[in-house]
Length: 401
Picture 1 (tube, rainbow, N blue to C red):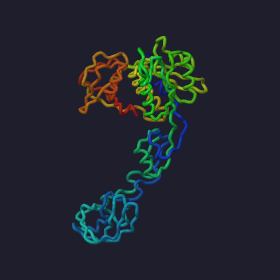
Picture 2: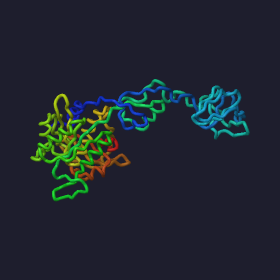
Picture 3: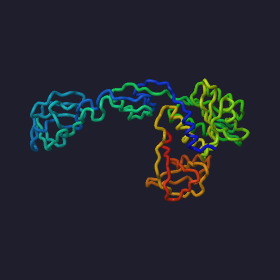
Picture 4: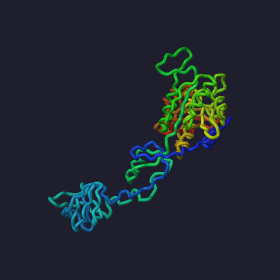
C-alpha cells in the first residue's frame, strides 16, 4: 500500500500540462490559467495625479494658514490642465493629472471658497495627496506570473495597464463515468437496493469549479466488457477519464481490470482514510495515452480522494502553480484517541476563536459530515489528537477552487 505522499508524488510526476494556448479578451479571461507572464506596458498611474478632490498648488505659495489664492483653472478627471500660474491654485478632482508647477494637493475640506479664490486652512507638505506616476506599477515590470488562475483583480490589473488580450491554456476536457447497477438519478423510481447517484453531482460540480470541460459518459453497468467499452469511448478526445465506483476487490468491481486491459495500472491501494481503493493508470497505446483515475463509490471517499489527489493532479495538468492549498494550525476542541494506520482526513468545523471540532460520525458514506463541516483535518498515520493540540486544518474554501 502506497503512502499518501508517495501516491501524490507519482500522480504529479505523470501529469502532463496542456500545451495549447488561447488568446482571450481580458474581459473574458477570469477563471482561466495564464500561460505566460505579463508585463506592464505603461506606468500606473500614467501621470502624477490627485488622490483627493481639492486644490493643486505650490507649497511655497502657502506661507501661512488662511493664505488666499486665486483659482486659475478647473481640472476634472479625464482632462489635462495647463501649467499652474504662479501664486494661484487649480481646482482639481480625484484622478486628474497634476498641472506643472503644482507640488501638493490640499483636500477641499481644509479649504474655504471665496468667489474666484480659495482660502487654504492647512500648511501642505511637498507631495501631499499626489499619486506619482509609476508608484503602483512601473512600465516593463512583471504584473502577473505564468500559472496564475486569473481572478477578477488580476484581469482588472491587466486592463489597468492596457492589456487587451491574455494568453491562457485551453480548458481541460474530463470525461466522467459512474459504475453500479444500483444507481438511480433523482426523480427516477427507487426500487429496493437502489441508491441515488450523488457522486455524479459531486464530481461534475467539483470539475466545473476547477474550470474543466465536463463530458458525462453516464452510468456504466457492472460488467467488464461494458466498462472497457465505456473507458475506450471516454478516452477518445479527453485529457482525463474519471470514474466513480468499481475500484474495490468485489466480483462486480471492474474498473481496475478494465484499465489494465485497455492500458496499464500504475497505482491502486493508497494509505488514506477514507478513500483507500483508488485506481490510477493510462488508457490507450503509447502514441495516445490518456490518464484514468478510478475513485471510490462512497461519497465522502470520493470527495476526499478528489480534493487531496485528483485536484492537485488536475491543477498541474492545467498549468497552475503553486498547487499546494493553504492550511492553518488550529486548536483541537476534541479528542481523537484511536487513530488509523493510514493518513486520515477528518471532516471538521472551525471556530472563530481558533478552535476546531470534528463531526461525530466519520464514516465514508456520511455525506452530511461534509456539509456540516467547513474543512478537513489532515492527521498523520497513528497520530493521537488530544484536546488542546494543534492540528493542520485545510479549509474547503481553499480546496474547492
